[in-house]
Image 1 (cartoon, rainbow, N blue to C red):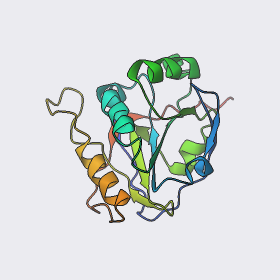
Image 2: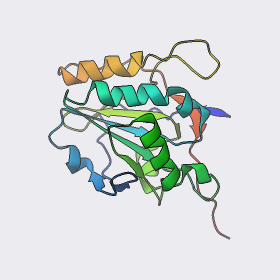
Image 3: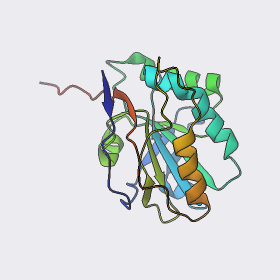
Length: 187
């Protein structure tokens, strides 16, 4: 069942993280992107049909903005016990198959997803140079089986504004996707 992202107030500071990339086995944190004008943090996974629907546009974003001052990191927080396709080896396969040019990290404790109040995949957070939330909304209006083309229009407009020092449009539509797959409490 699809759910909408929880809309955080604009201006919220980026919560810190230190996570291992599933491809290069390097640790990434906010400091890893200190030289970037903006930072896009995306909560994604491998199995969700909403992510599968936009995965090539996400890869295209990485290629299109590689030299534009935008840092990008993908984070997967799903419980790999319940969803083995979201385990690090399968995420690595996805990143390599789709051609991601940015790190894809695994949030094994799910603490980072909780800190960001991530609720669905995909969930997009765009932070400005001061690492204050400038945009938290949808990639575009397309959805699986919606017959709308995947363009990245909404997110691209926000990125372009932030990279030029302008505010993103404050009329932001929540992202919609599969819920984060939280670990079951051990009883």
